[in-house]
Structure formats: C-alpha cells, structure tokens
Length: 404
Image 1 (spheres, one colour):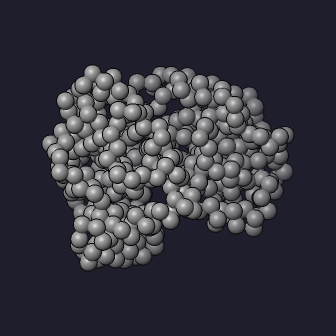
Image 2: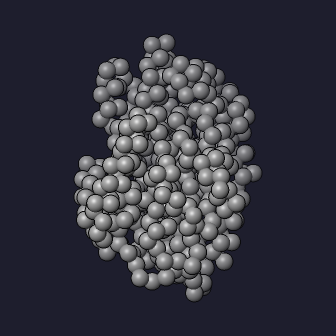
Image 3: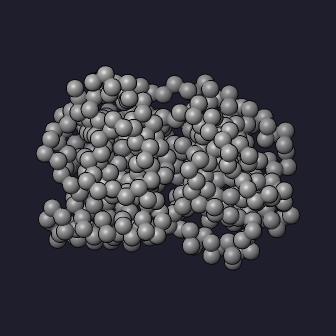
C-alpha cells in the first residue's frame, strides 16, 4: 500500500481547494481496494471545505477549525497561527530575517502581499512528521510548496502550480530554490506552465500540465437546486464569483459598473465571495453611489443556481492560472466576458465561446454593454460554451500516472 501525503495552505472555499476535494474523491476506488493510504496536512489548520473531505482521507492536523478563513474570526485565528509559527521549531531570528528580506523586496517592487511575506515562516513553523511517504504532493505554491520541499520525508515529491507565476509576486528569494527538490511539477494550464518555465527555465523538463478536476455532472445537477437571486430585481443581472482580492480586480469591475449606470443601463452586478478587500470595496461602492447596484452577498455554499439565473457572467482578473469559477460558468452555458490574460485565454476563444477584453473599466463596460443589448448573442455564446466544454471533458492523466 502506497502512503500519499497531500499538503495545502488552507481548506477555505476557493478553486484549488475544490479541485483537491474532487481529486481525492476520484482516488476513492483505489483507496478502498487497498492501493493507497491517503493523508492530508493543512498548514493553517482552517477552512470550511474540510467538511467535504472523503472519509478515507486521514487528516494529520491535531486541531482544525471548519470556520471560514475569510471571516473576522478566521483571520484572527490565522494571525495566531502565524505568530506561533515564528516560535515553533526554533530559528526565530532566521524566520524574522527572511520575512524582513521579503518585505524589503516587496517595498522595492511597490507590491505588498502579506501572505507571501509570511509563507516561509509558516512553513518552517509547521508540524513535522517522522514517517516517510511514498509520494508527497504540494497542492499549492507558496507555503505548501516550501513545506513539502524542505520538511517532508518522501520518496517522490510533486507540486501543482495554480497561478501565473510571473504575475503572482513570487520571487527566487522567497522560493529559496525549493523547486530543486521536486521530481515533477504540474501547472493547471498551458499558460501557467509557460509562465513558470520563464521564471525557472532550468526546471522546464520537470513541468507538465494537469487541469483542475471538476465534477461536471454535479455542477449541472446542483444548478437545479433551490437558491440563487432573491432580491426580486427586474433588470439585467451580472454575476462574478471570486475572492475579494487584488488579483480578482473587483475594483475595476466596480468602475465599469459606474460607467454602465451613468450610461443608463438597467443592471445590477453581484460578486459572490469573501476576502481581505471587502471593506475597501464597500467604501468604494458608497463613494460611487453603487450601494444598490454593485452587491457583495458573500461566499455561498452552492453558487450554481446563481450562474444559470444570471444574464451575464464576468470574470475580470489581473492574472489567472485556470479559474474553476470561469470553467463552471462555461459548463453551465453562461454568456461570459473575461479579461484578456493568460489563464482566461486558455478557456475562452474570443468571439466563439465568450468575449475577451482588456482589463480597464471602459473596455470592460463596453464588452458588457454589447452583450446586455444582444440577447441572441448571449444565447449563442452560452450554447457554444456548453458544446466546447463537452469536448474538453477528458483531464490530463499524467498526475495519476505519478501515483501508480
């Protein structure tokens, strides 16, 4: 029986976490037959998606909070975990020095990212295990990748990159050549692979593509469950699903909505998700007079009824790996407008199964307005999206081969 360890940063409600749950679910038959023994370690020991973990997965965290990582309480718990990490396993001076070095690099680049600033300290202060695994798999870049590379004993090591590495803010200084320790590295899209290889050309021979796994039948089934919009609004509904972070460019979407309202469009924009920028976005909505027009209902357990009830889905991001939210919109036959970046470009063929546009408020507003005015075009794009997804149902099997 092969012992496999999966490591992830949190189990909060997000795309990579959903993809992990689906991958673990697909390992079920092999686990039941005694082929695999599956373990999971979550660096921050938090996240509501832990409740979806298949019963045969052995959670190695001795304590775990199933609350939202993005709630006020969740953020306070995360801060406590980070603080304790500085004192656990020794090396506090080295940890502080590393964080200070990362901070200096971020200030120089004028881009402060707290999570990346502290992932190294969290990794170094995480729990260590004596057993040797047949395979250790870091499901995310950052803390998970650092931890598996430096603190896990395994015969083989692999990692999955879910982002555009060039644009996400990671540096060689942060990574400290952790990728040297991996036998295989997987990117969730062709564009993600190319981005990583530009950053680390010396490891290009290790890199393969492994698309996020999505249970398409379950997505379609759950779209028919009760839920969705409940505000009895009689205008056009625009939907976005994603975390309230800088990457997801909700601020640009809000500026685009202001242009649409000023132009007289009878529409309302909804963003399902939580994140550190909620207060800033709520303040911006108030300043723009969009309190009734640009709504932030929060994260929901089943967003799929919202997708099928919306008139238009918009995915405006600054960078992307391969968005599960966008892929789910295509599966459900939504008319889609997406920003023209690598990860989105891998799913959308402009004018065929969606519309790509530059990430600016005027360009986004123009693309959205064109589809709000053209119901026939929205139906055509939604139909093409469904047909394209049916063709792409087969996932890359390379990662499964690594488990054999």
